[in-house]
Image (cartoon, rainbow over all chains, first blue to last red; front, side):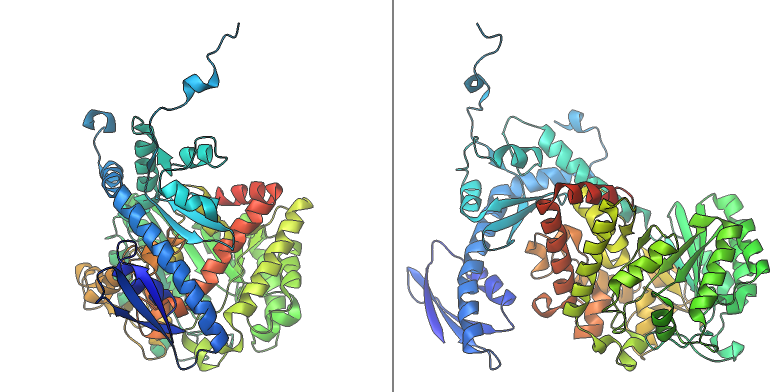
Length: 99
Length: 485
């Protein structure tokens, strides 16, 4: 078992959930949201996980949380343009006249 | 005095904007990012945050590529949005065409007894294992209810040549209906060739029927994999192949191979056999976790890692052959490369999203049952009727196509909303395979973190990209393969 502290303003609860889902074969997590500034994540080893696998999983968990945060930022940033592109993709009218 | 303004005059004064893309770690030092149409780009770890934070300088070596591949754009540009929209629409255009491949299982009887075969029966009992004319009539009516302008009818078994009278009946009837329907109608017979006769070939010639056969490798391997009375399956194949090519034409006969545990150490010999027999490619297939392959433990005889080694060794060898001037393709790679390097989707059922079950291919079984795919009927042989969509004798087209047994798996397994898949950079190359995940995990969505389907395909995607990125000649070859589908 090991605990990590993440700033609330930088990482969402969803990013922890998505990161741990990828590592479900080796770890589970508990999320403590009681602090105003930080989320405390306790990482637990699955029964069949070796110490070595656990260390790698903890390292990967940190990386995946970072990746998820990047994805969230990207998704938020590009949401309007994604909808516009989908609109263009599925519109049957002349695109230029739609401007 | 220079005729042109200095380069500074052409620099954009405004900040670039991001277009939607997905990201994943590709290796220890690079991320892979893919845009909405599936184009990929590799970018160093330290630059990915800069890119997303809009801090990547225009002078960066990635910048021009990122712009030309529609990962970023300037706010005053409209073309990148229209291009992405067009590519995305092209990629999905196949969906509107609906079901193209219609598989008729005209009999389960077979003269072979392959240990990995999912379905065949060594029985002479025609009444138990042959499709009836009434079922065939109803199935043909169903085929022409599909809105697809192109309709392919594939005869499978068992050995379909054991019920060739019904094959003839279906061909005649479909052609008659098509005189009014005017579809692009094609027929394929999937056969081992062992029972091929001159009369059958003449009929195939008259009706432009294509033959799809099976070749597992050199004689010893093929005969071990495909036992039949006389232990002469390979010899029968060669005789049939030559006869069929003579009558129908060289390119009207193709062959498929199945990888068993016996094949794993012989990939080069298998490929050589295909080259020697004049085939222009091979489909390096793994065993599916269905039917007799599981019952006889053939599926468990080797793991995904062993198959991946087999595939990679084979692919290396095929690339080497091409560099020596032998024009030869690995078809599974070619399907994936087409998804990676073009805006087309070749419509390969296992790698489609939404899944291709029912809406790309559908199966009319010998007993009248209609299944969502070939794999679904194999599951049914193990008494799992999850993907039995109804019976052609009593259910209508609407009952079958709108059945919850089809719509639920299509909706549940949709990769753009499936955990892990929805964020995966390789999503547009991959597919939803609810049947595989139901068969292996009893979960149609699939727990991708422990899915062999995911592991196998991810490994192939990365391998193909690595090969392309490390060798220009391989990239040229892969571009040719991508554009052959």
